[in-house]
Image (cartoon, rainbow, N blue to C red; front, side, top):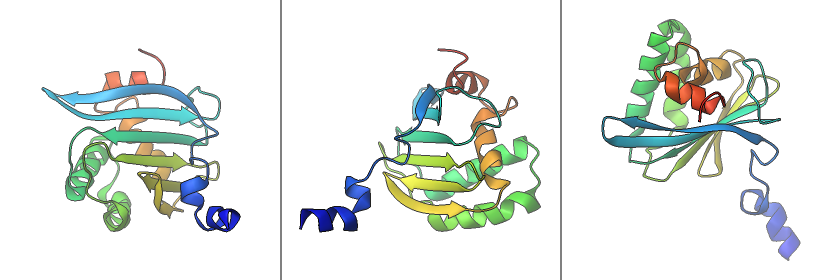
Length: 162
């Protein structure tokens, strides 16, 4: 019976989707006096290079955030990175379907796989995936691009600053 339960409940008994990855760096995003989230970047060897795959970004939220606010912030960051609206609008449409409202201490995990497909997990439960080969790297650019909005956070995530 226990084996049947384990086979039917892989999310409960299975390994974490990032169990084979190693942390590269961690950072907390604070705006004015508020801590927004704590993030950790993972890779297969614990080092970061731009083209390295798989790579994962885990974000533990330190405050409640509505899904719509996350979508707006994502669009603003893509605008700052000069990603064309007609490119990212379909991505936002898909994110709108899978992203939940966030409560304090919820975790959102993003994994960009070796084949360039991407997956999202919410509190260890798979939300959905993207097969668009351009989505994953452009999503990670929000945090990892040299022109990202928070350069100190970027340096900490890629292991260049403590």
